[in-house]
Image 1 (tube, rainbow, N blue to C red):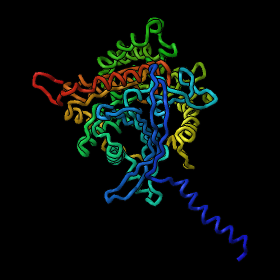
Image 2: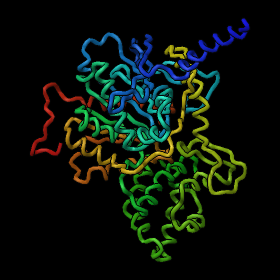
Image 3: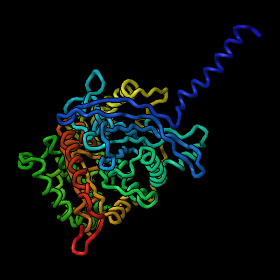
Image 4: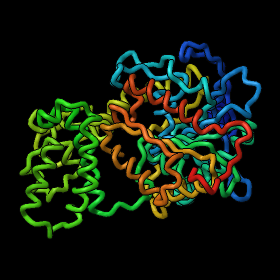
Length: 501
């Protein structure tokens, strides 16, 4: 055999396994680094463990590896009193990057004080991180971040096992059980935090962990929650957008002078009351609404949205969100962002029913993508040739059987320790703030759990923590929530007949 040919074949034999190893990283391997950050004036030392932990099937065979990053404060001898927060983002199909390097973690990406990209890209210390009071693990479901199913699995089987409301909850609960066991955190107070689609995920997990894995939580934090499978009906769904429309119009100074002169949180109670007490009944009448009443409602909606009465009547009082994002600043040549309506975008033409793109999301991807790829490789020392999926292929997503709001209610009812906190941005048009309030109202019809529910609003959008002022405030709200949901020593998880708590 030709000597050059022999050398080539040998090189290929060694190169192919190496390439396979790089592209299909070990499903059960981690790397640990040390770090430090100053939080609220105190130097906090920590370890950061990142890598993959397996998902197993019913026969104990590895079917996937989930990429995670786990931060532990150093020098903590008693983990029984140290809270553990398990963090998920949404999509479905989104990596855990957003809250990881912009909200609760020890490092955050470099952006300006309102959340816009700046160069050079990179990261900086997070002076508001909750790592001073809790350890945190950021979890990436299958096909997000570096998480993948095994390459030998049939695509239909991958979809069946991982891509749906209930399959997602089932396999992630098993993964969490393994993680808590491996890290010896069963004694610790445990919390779930989810953002956007991560909110039905953690709501469903609260009951799945409790009923299938006998793991009881202290708290669930819902950041910019979806509808959680709670029925709204056509009248309620259409009416409930109005408070968000008003907030966005206020931000862009499109309201009448009397409303514009007031602070945002001073005008919203009036609009929320109108929505619940008047607009929902009006919407329920549909085409049988008397003409005079319809015109009166159009005038009121115009006052609260900054849109014309003509446009509102043309839409039969029901303004689609996509149209609102296009219409509000149409005369100025801009559209507004979906997930954060403070952001502006430019379309090919001013005409049309919807924006050409999501102004806020393109801005976020602009700053987040370089930062997370740089951070994982250079700071966490995790090296792979896999692409980090900011948004991974998880569709079609099976949305049937979504009872996650009811699951969370049942978990709370069964567990007197369990508290819930909602965090929402006033300018979020994707998962609007008023519907997040509506979730809490409808989740527990008895009203017996509401003392363990809390809600906070912020003057930003879907990722309220991108605005520096809200980053500080929202992290402080998590600290307060942990303190509130930590029972006094010796306090039993018990209901009393003379109390609804």
